[in-house]
Length: 476
Image (cartoon, rainbow, N blue to C red; front, side, top):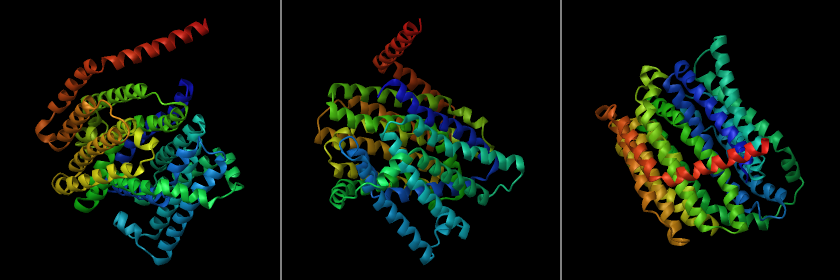
């Protein structure tokens, strides 16, 4: 994948992150923390439905994409079972009358119930359409889908503000649902060629059973990973209150810079590593990629930690602790991104059972830490618990890959990952005691990392200078 293609892939996530950053302060001033907390639980429920409803067959689609002779048939075989399962479950829940809105939002409302199910099904289709575009390396189309939902949501929120509509949860969930549906329609249209080809493709039950054997362990692994990400929000819902959940959600949203880097990296990395393996994997080059990603993780942690105090000027007073827990909230996406470079061996050797064990064991750690910390600390405790649990997740994935595939250097990886996890978790829980000293500590870590990762900085400098010089020569 060339630099131009990579830049095209990054346009969507970067612009979407920028829009989300603009949207967040607007939401914080317009809606209560309780309502923001409720919309966060809706997002948790939607992601849960895709993880379990899809039976992880989207992983089989990505894994077999470059090796399957009929990609249209591959799409049909991997999409239909999961979508039908999700549709059947939604229909049964409606018929039985399960009070999903009460469980999620603490309020029984049939409108909320219907919108939850609409978001679930629309997200399922949109996610598959995005995967189609990503695997086909249709970078600009993929970026457009990322932009459509976020852009429409911000526009709708601004219209609510200027036109004076009610600023309550009915309005907020309606705007969110509208943005999800529009994103789905845009995704279907952009991937219409592939969808139409899949419609007329052959369906092989024999191949389906083979894909299920591959993906079934990933269902449990994906479910464990979903729980690893979502248990903090659920814990706040049950052991604290919606206000703390809203504060936590705002902190996670501001930590979206880490999600942005993770999204860009995994978008490019997933198809790249499978194609790289098919062409002949260079192990030494893979070690260098891991080193560079570790450098990026430490730089992002420390830079955001140093300047996160600025966030307090963007939000109402009731969100004052957000600036102290942002770095802990970045742990999940950053450590996941780093682990994607170290877990390669498990994916390439198809040892998916061990890919399942890592998030499952980390989930148990997260549950224990949330049980201990959330009742006493609320949102800061949840941030610290998930941050530390993701270090365990990264550690397990890395060790499994090193033992079952091949050994590789890990001392530097573990030292910096542990340092960032502990400092950010301590800043979150002990923010009242540490105060401004925590921001100063991050500045020191950043300066030290410049020395530790000087080789990565040199490689980046040489790369961009060579690109700049080559472009200058061409233009002249």
